Image 1 (cartoon, rainbow, N blue to C red):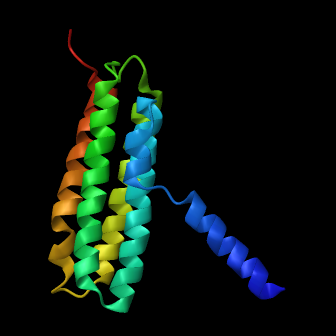
Image 2 (image 1 turned 30 degrees about the horizontal axis):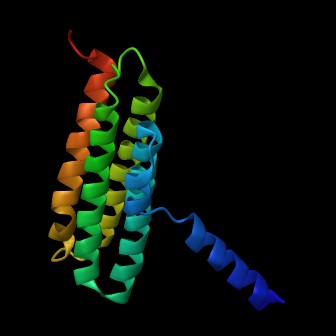
Image 3 (image 1 turned 180 degrees about the vertical axis):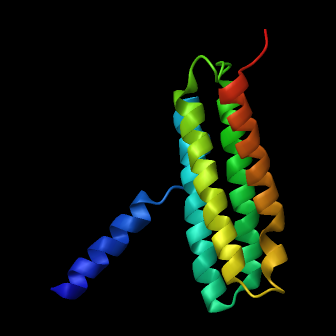
Length: 144
């Protein structure tokens, strides 16, 4: 009985896990951005697991996926043509999500061995840039 419950939970987790292809196929640009950010968070969790196994090549690939997902999320939000100052809902959600992702990336990087820490530098830089752009958009808005 317990094994069946555990299997059901694992299968449900696999079904709920977002991927970038699913995000790219979403027609709603706002939801597309959120799915891409969910994918970045899922990739970070996978990177934790891969690092625990000692698989630095997979950590490097997942770091690239994190950066790609965050950049795709920002591009999707920009593609809406909405002014983040006048319609801040989705932009603020994305900014909060990238802030949390940055915090988790930093904590993960600090937990890593010093020689492995550069694996996450590029991903952190991309996430930081997107976060800063989103924050400026919400606070300053677009000039007309």
